Structures are given as C-alpha cells and as structure tokens.
Image (cartoon, rainbow, N blue to C red; front, side, top):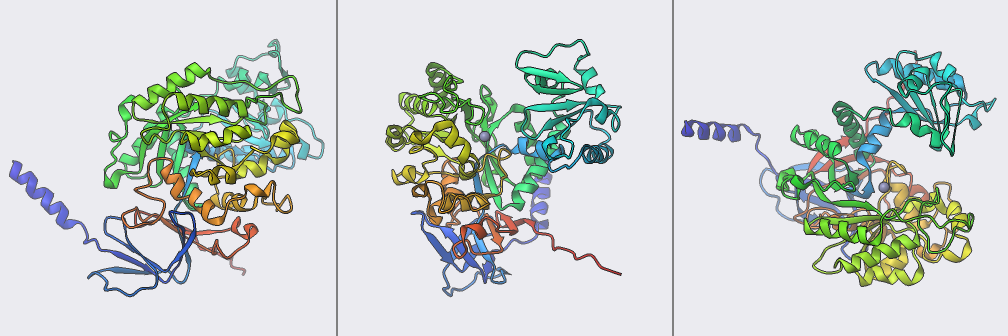
Length: 549
Ligand SMILES: [Zn+2]
C-alpha cells in the first residue's frame, strides 16, 4: 500500500509541467537600493521557485537552458509596492456596500438603492454610505419614507458621507425596535428615520455581522482592487478572528494571491496562529500573523487624539488615552512573550510619548524587536529623537498629511506643527520609515502616497511648494518606504521589497517612470501588470472603444 502511494506521488510530480527560469528583458527597471537611492536596471532573471535569481544592468550572460523570455516592451518595472498599514477586510466590505457618493438628489439615491437591491437579492440588510444632502438642490435630509418607496422587504441603513448621521427605512427601524416613542440618547437626534450622532448606535448595533460568505467576497474584492493599484503585500492592522479565518480559507483554497501580514486586533492574540503555524514555508508565505495592534488614542478629526496641551480650536479638551500606561506595558509584554510584534496606534503627542515610554520599559529597543508606532502623526519635538534611540519604527501615511493639513493646523495651532508628520526628521535620525495609506480611510492607491511623500502636496497640487516642505522625502526614501522598509517593518525584508537575489519576484509594470515625472504625474501612474512570485496575478484590461454603427 505504501509503495502504491509513493508511486502515485511520483506520477503527480511527473504530470507537473516542466518549470523553467524566466528572463524579463527590455524593461526600464526602477527600484530603491538598500541605502534608499533610486537605481535603474534592465532585466530580471526569475527562478522556477518564483524568486529573483539576478538583477541585470545591461550585462550579457549565458541563459540557463530552457529559460522562458518575457519581452517587457520597454515598459517601466518596479518592485511590487507594500502598504505598511491598511485594513483589508474593512476595505473589501466598504467596496461591497451601496456607494452613494456623488448622488445629486434623493431620486438618484433611490435609483442606486433600487439597482443595488436588485443586484443583491440575498443580502439580509442593505447598508450603504456616502450621501450628502448639501449636494442636493433642496438640501433636504432623506427620510424613511424615501427609502420605503424603494425597498420595504428588508432593512436599509445608509450612512451620510461624514459618518455623523444615517437614515433607515421602516424595516430597519422595526428590526432595531425603534418606534415613534423612542427617545434619542443624549448627544443624538431622531427625526423621520434620520439618526444623528449618538442616536445612530440604536440601529448600528442591529446590523448583522458579515457572514463567512460575505467576508470571502469582501476579501476577493479587496485583493483585486489592491493588486490593480500595484500593491503586492499589505500589513493588515487589526485582523479579527473571523477575518483571519476568511484569509486562511482563501489561502488554503488557492485564491489568496496578495501577501498579507496580519496584526491581530486588540485582545485577540490568535494563540494557535503563531508565525510558523500559518505555514511560512516557501510557497505558502502569503500570510502570517506578524503582531498585535493596540490603540493608544483616537484621531485628530474627532479630537480623540491625546495631546499634551489642549486643542487650539477646543481649549476645553486634549483628547484622551484609550489605554493606561500599565495596560499598554502589560499587553505589549504579553505580545512580545508570544514572539509577536507590537504595533500601537498613536496620533497625539501625549499618546506618542506614552507609547515610547512603554516601549522602552518593555525592552523594545533590544533583541531586534521592531516595535511599531502606527501613524506617529503629532510628536513633541524632544520626543522625535526617542524613536531612533529606542529603535522604534514610525509607520506613517503620507496621504494623511495632505488630507489633514488644514484640520491639523486648526486643531494644533501654529506652534505645535514642528513635530507633525515629521517624515524627514525621523528618517534622518537613522531609522526606517515604512509608508502606507490606512485604506479604507484613504484610497489604497500608493502612487498618490509616493507623490505626497516627495512633494507634501495633495492631488490638487496644494499648497504651492508643499506643506512644511523640509519634511519631504526623496524619491529613493519614498520608494523604500513603500517597498524595502515596509517589508522590513513586518519582518519580511529577507523575502521581498527590493527584488534582490533570493527575494520573491513581486513586481509591477507601470505606464511611466517614477524618476522622470513630476509629483503631479507620479500620483497619476497607471499600473499595467502585477506579478507575485514570478506569476502574473493582475493585468489592466484593454480599454474597448464602443463601436458606432
Ligand atoms: Zn488604520
């Protein structure tokens, strides 16, 4: 019996098509070197194991027998980009919701709702977001009756663009047990099915959690969208247990192509899924639990970020911490004991100081631990040097700076901006600054991120000359932030990020040379093809011009 099984295995191997090396030639290669300079190359030799064998700089050499050749047609090839901070499932779920952004009237909202309901007959609840009555001619808020006119058979719950109000149909109100007699909680308001601020929780808590099927679909949608933007890997900051299970299923059924570094959400240590248990073996390195994600404070926009001094535009508050220093030290110690990385969200200067102190206390600067501060947005100037001193990794999002600029000026006033979004100061202090987008808070497209990193300007090219331009990064630094340094920040530097010999052959073909265009044009780069481990996993569909007859 044993012999027979062995025989069957041998046959299986024989049936596999013969693998061969792949030479990618006739390309304009652009990558960041280990010392963050822009380097050009002309070709790439990829082994049958999906790893880079050799980066070519125009030299001639004898090809191994049977090598396949891919003519790049003179296109620009870059390493696959890595987002050091995103939310894969949150993005996929958001992509699957009814999108109401840009609607010009209640009638248009109703039409989109009608189409979406018809396209998703089995969804128990219809959730959507993005309406803004300020954009409508009559500026009237939508009501339950507006939604009932389209969908009556199941709950509909639609969030306003800013997340501060939602409207529900009668079925949603019924499911939540809300009647005409229901009083709004303090800090909230209810009228005609419109729920404002604190009142939205009355219905929110009844929206069913996504099913396993919905999560699988969301993961597939997120993956497709991320690959199409040139991302070949992402750190998932706060993976829940059901999300982890969905990713694992996708990995085992072979549909997971994107590389995901999971950081377990607060309190969920995923004990059975230590690195290694997830299968870090050569071909199965698509995802692993890398660390845990903790929150030290909130965000600047809602004044939840914890500041050392009161908010300039709300002198009664300085935000608040979400953990005590003791809790933070305890949780960090527990994670480190499990050989996990610790990644702590800290936006305000008080939160950053607390995290730096906790990291020092638990020995983050020793034994190659790579403890991370997520966002590291507002830092008291004397604390900036503590990152390098404590070997702490600031994981930063260039597009947050361009989106937040005016709001940050209002919240902080003019005298607290020296340590705000201080990319170059941190980079110059001798540490790596991995970059990302925090999708879906921002669009995951890494090219506007690269452009913001080198220009400190938004997609609108504002402000002229860049905001606090002394904190701009060089293109080499920015590319490294989205490749080598992002890989390093998740302990994947030996495996990807630089297209170095021995690393995974994760690369993209794009329509322009990042080192030869302006920041404005860099932000508008189109990805043509995305390759992971030497295999094409995405390509741009040719645009079809409709025939006229
Ligand atoms: Zn985030």
